[in-house]
Length: 420
Image (cartoon, rainbow, N blue to C red):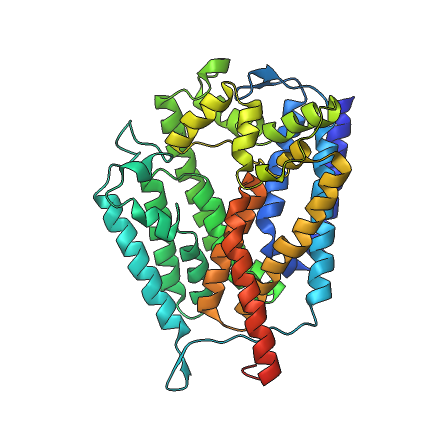
């Protein structure tokens, strides 16, 4: 009976999501990765609560109502995102863009930046061992063995600002942008990144187009014969690479899963939501006392892994050396820190003052054609999404500083009536 109730609740959440999608497409899309998290995590929670083994926790799942508890987090997220954006809608944000002799030069500046950074990363990859050809190299330890590991700190693990910048450039240089995007995806495959760069990179590329285009034009551009063929080819390529990887290695041999297809199915449905299920089971269902320790937030993932991983703190230390993590430690970590009611209230404050505000600033910069500032804002927004899914709140610091400076600059420009 609980399984069918979970399914019905998931369908209700889907209906509500579609309603919000129709209500304000642009606001919905800019927060698309939060929606994506929900629709990977909810099926996983349903799957776990049917009694499936959780390999990372070494125990079997059972019904604890985790789908409903997460669903409430998700509904509060949607509601307060839309309320915050609507409140800020009449507010102006005056910004600037780079000019030369009175002309906007942001497009050539971005193009040079993208080509230069991607060229440096490709050169580094050509001089470094690849997970595709070296069994000892994985996506988790690639940068540890890379020729120039400092590039990871400069540009990030997957340089996610590149596809976003290409999305800004696309209306001006369509074919060039698509070609560079294909090279970017190929580069990430080469360094062992399989699923995330496809999903996150596609989202990053489409985000500025969703903000700038009319909804109908955007959807027509997205869903045409060429784009559908490209998505199918990318999907097949991703499937082949993962299949070959799982055929050589058996990541779930501990629970006697050896077939690559079965391993992929378990990876998608068995692991995405296990931390939230564990937090619900331990701190809500069994009513273990929360810690009230806000110091858990900067590295919430590590705290969750210490609490639930087989091997505890020793496993966390080993995983840190290998660059390996679980997934979706937020909002799970909130149940470890607060009682449920306080956890939901804290989450609402995070949604209003961090997630929504960051998304609104990014949207205004895109609309103002302040492309260089938009790229910087997107990088921090991407870190915000990362923090609010993986539980690494230390990632929020620079984004909060950037947002404060942008708002301060906007207030100054508004007072002096500088720029439009």
